[in-house]
Image (tube, rainbow over all chains, first blue to last red; front, side, top):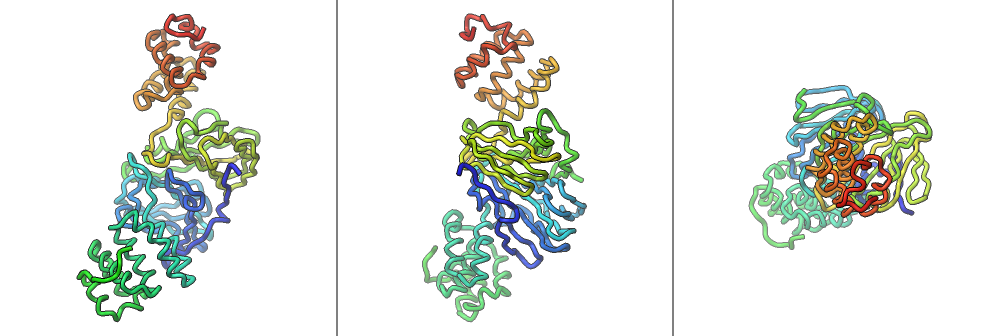
Amino acid sequence: MSVHLTTLDELDSIPVGDHGLRWRPVRRRLGIEGFGVNAWTAQEAGQEVVEHHDETGTGAGKHEELYIVVRGRARFQLDDEEFDAPVGTCVFVRDRTVRRGAYAEEAGTTVLAMGGKPGEVFEVSPWESYFAAIPLFAAGDYDGAGALIRPELERNPDNPSVLYNLACAESLGGRVDEALEHLARAVELNPATAEWARDDKDFDPIREDPRFASAVAGEATTGGESA
Amino acid sequence: MSEERYSVARLDEMPRKGRGNWAQIRAHFGIEAFGVNAWTGDEGDTVINDHNEEGSGQQELYYVVSGRATFTVDGEEVDAPAGTFVYPDDPARQRTAVAAEAGTTVLALGGKPGEAYRTLGWEWTSEAFPFFGEERYQEAYDVLAAAEREHPDMPGVLYNLACAEARLGKTDEAVAHLARAIELYPAFTKLARDDPDFDSIRDHPSLSIA
């Protein structure tokens, strides 16, 4: 076949976060490498349909982004501004520091999101790797989750968000040394990850290890191999 | 609302241009990182023109926003109702789409792996075509001269710039740009031979298109 076909309804629907947001991977499904494109769906009204974020974070692609509401109706928030966004609304966010997000006003609201960095070769956003691993985490396949995230770490060895999520998989999968090393490195690169780790159940298996306290305190651990 | 940091528009309220009722989403917002446009048509209207992306090397993804379209990719026909993504697996694939229902809108996204995005020449030439139709050659020239500054080696831009220059009596420039267009894309020789835009320069000794 000379053409790949899929529909919104056939895309994977991966739950992200605690506000009903569902990631519908388009770029990854079709193998697109020239630009970023994904869909996001809220199954119920009131749920998040665009994750509230800016494009400066360590998991972000640092992209300029275009959102198009393709189903339902959303309420967008850009910094302090809020507005109604029915089907056909296009929202272009050039400035990566703008905090953007949206909630669904109707069940099934879906937003198509596109992105890339002006003047630079497109690179896949780091978050895609650990979002793609969510179903494996949910299924208890922690080795599989780690295997999905590890190539992203090879591409971005100093990305604290990737390190942190890999450490989660390793902790749950019983890879204690690797988990502690990657968590320590994440904290070293981004001290905020120490706060994330304190209440993150993914680290319960290693929380009592004396090296855990050192890792979240920003004290480097030893042992284990780098991924 | 700040127009610089972000901006908002409705697809159905965006200015439309030319054949296929073209919504210039990329140009409208000034997007620089990827290509994005939409075309709308009624049953039987072409919503994606017959083309391939071999020259640009660009990957293109089409999404049917509303209505229903019939895509043809390398001779293979595909029914694509609203909500369908259509992705030719190779830029060289010949592709086109025709609306199968009234009010069909198809979104097209593009970018080239391994290269920073650059605006493609066709966006400029498509903008200039209506001016040719109305014999507003100076305006066509202005659009294409700006395109040539950004795409000095894009054969389609050079060819159409030469058309405008020939119409405006800018003979030397027209000859130079047409010669360069043919050098880059020899198939333009045949096109130029019968193109009335070149009546004034067809017999020029520097050209061999007569």
